[in-house]
Length: 134
Image (tube, rainbow, N blue to C red; front, side, top):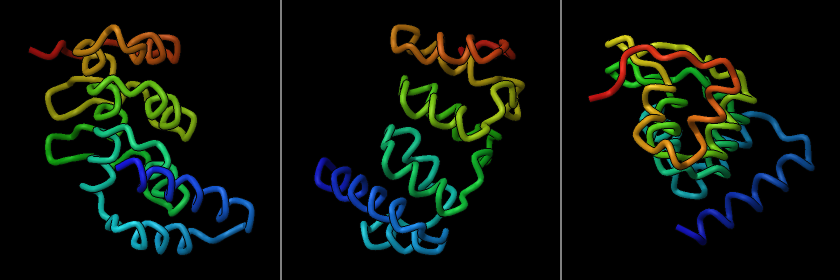
C-alpha cells in the first residue's frame, strides 16, 4: 500500500509537470494495478488514498460518482474520516449537500467519526443534515 501510494504520488507529480492528458492519468492508474472503474474510485475514497483519488479526478472521473444506494464519493470519504480526501473532493466541486437514496448527506456520514475533522470541514462548506445514520 505504501509503495503504491509513493508510486502514485511520483506519477502524479510527473504527469502534472508534463501537462498530460486525461488518458495519461488513466494509463498511470492501470500501471499501478488500479482499474478505471466507478466502484474502484469509491473504494479509494473509502481508503483515503489521496494520490490515487487525484489520478482518478485528473483522468476525468466524475466527482459526483455514486454507488447503487446513491452514496457519493464525498460520502465515502466523510464516512471513513478522511479529512484530506474530503477537502480534495470539495475543492474539485463535489456537492456538499447531495443526498443518497435515503435522503442522507455527507454531514450525516461524517457523524460516524466526528473526531476526524471531516464533520468540521463539511459544516464550514455549508453542509446540512439530511437524515442521521443509524
